[in-house]
Length: 306
Image (cartoon, rainbow, N blue to C red; front, side, top):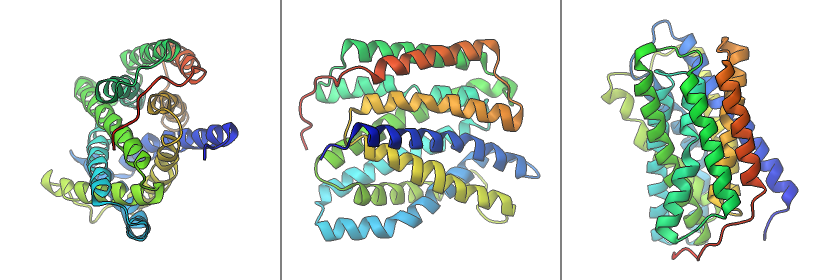
């Protein structure tokens, strides 16, 4: 059953607010560390997904077993979880090297990759207005990233920007594969249970491989890990996983472009990472693109071969 327009809008609004907190919680965790080690982003990514997976895995796996979900779909959900692990390993790490404004703007370029992958894999051609909205919105993210407001790492910004783009590519595949898995009959609860658990398991060894540990961290950092798992992950990402089953994934990805705005505002208030005039211009362009895309009709698409 297709949900009402009000339910879709309210769920997506809640999701945007929740995911916008992710970069802010991470920056708080950085500030809580006596000394900030290299690879701290991997520590926070592993903690975030490890907790989220621990919470949802029992329910998801029990649901999958009860519903008799085919192993093929469980495999799709697991593959989606691996992409989610790559996304968080790259994106959260990027926050250690570049500004919140640049990182969240660049990771939000996934509408381009979602649209390209959907077209190449399934022949899903976006409408002209949706395509125009995507390109206008992406232009806005480019302007925001060029401003690089409040960059905390100087010459390492390009490395952080590259990590954010890798995160964008991975999240694009994650959303598309998640949509296909749910469209083929796997329930949301079963899907996120498997995907989040696999992502958590994939990320847990990475801190040790980079010479870091999940142990002996300040209490405040553990608290922020829990907040990362509960708010942007369980509340935010699960909202978008629900929405992507009912509306076009490219449109969902474009709506996610609102995340840099919320994160940039929060960074200015909490950390004095004030946006420059160029950033404000980019945000305005971004909003125009989101408006164009969200009022566009659904693109023509052929059914996904499950």
